[in-house]
Image (tube, rainbow, N blue to C red; front, side):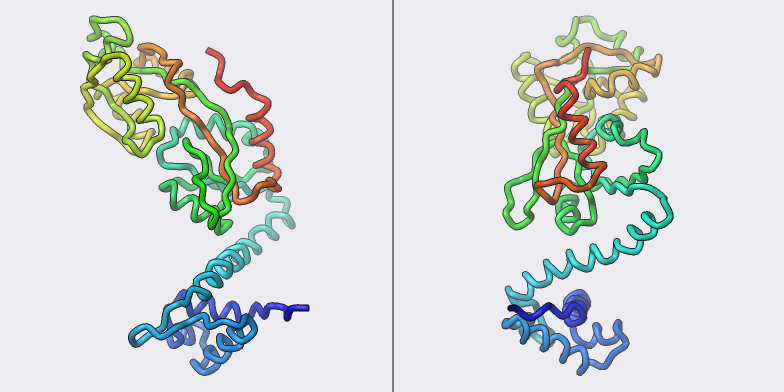
Amino acid sequence: MSTPLNYRHLYYFWVVAKEGGMARAAERLDMAVQTVSAQVRALEQSLGYALFKPAGRGIALTDAGVAAMTQADQIFQIGEQLPAAVRDAATGQGLRLAVGMSDGLPKLVVKHLLQPVLHDPRVRLLCHEDEFDRLLADLALHKLDAVLSDRPAPPNPNLRLYGHALGEASMAWFAPADVARKCKLPFPACLGELPLLLPTHHAAVRARLDQWFERQGLRPRIAGEFEDSALLAAFGRSGMGAFPASRWSHEELLQDRRMRLLGDTPEVLEHFHLISAERRIHHPLVQQLLSSARGAPASPAK
């Protein structure tokens, strides 16, 4: 039988790695350097491998130390979430759902994707927007329950992430009424006349839009490119140009009487994915999101 892991030793190792040295770790822990060093050596002896190596005047992680740090990060990140989880369960404050949103994902689409759980009064929703790769790192460390994205989980055996398709929606083109009135040609030819606002190439749908322009024989006059979809729509609404948006944004955009629907591009699809850190989903709200997506049509009704 293997010797049980001493989590106190692991915690001291974790602090040393975080602080970058024994002395800084000892200061943070309010302990003697010799005591911290002894605790780390005890962990190395129990694991059978050196976790640190000399590096100049300091120390650095060995390959074994990097592997141990990856696991320790997960353990102590989860531990930091324990008080809030216990408090919420004990006080009946509800179900916490921490969702990461890829920065290229339209905000109105995010609202649509999360709608199946928003009606539950127990839900306490925490939304984090960031770059795709950073969100995946946070998901792997269990800082997030799920990530919503416009692309599937990349193949990476080290992260062990799993993708789940949530559906797809066709794109449509919108413009303020005064911009739309300048069109002398029918859709889609009018897009060759108007200034256009587009997502940058970090959004998966941009490549599909460029291919569609090429098939239509259009040379777009690009007035602006935006990483943030909400900012793109805001500049579009201000009159800067026509812009594409998911059909799931259709109703909300047209509630603004100044906006006009120029036309649909049903052949240009935006795909949506939920990425989890586990193959079998245990979080009840994440299960509900997936169940709702599987029970809904792939594309919204027009």
